[in-house]
Image (cartoon, rainbow, N blue to C red; front, side, top):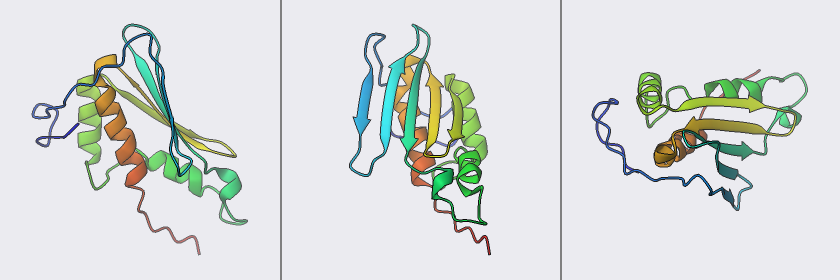
Length: 136
């Protein structure tokens, strides 16, 4: 799953294929949930659920979970915003996220032969949230 180079033209990914009839589910010890599910022959979806939402915000400091959701696929220590956009577009991935009262969910729609890239982008989006926000 390693990334080589800095643009979509120089990236070399070891393809990991998600067969059409296979659904992958994993719950990690920290509560993070991941599901990879085929939609049809052309696309599959990876959903990563994080048990943090609006209910976890303190009074007077609302909107933090939603703000972080909007920043999930922005620059991080692994890729710039441009690299995330280029890699997604070049390989046919679509990224999205939403926040509810109880959770934040990352959703990446991808061609089945790009499961490894979808997992890599999701991991980087979750791992890189090292923002120091001060709402004082």
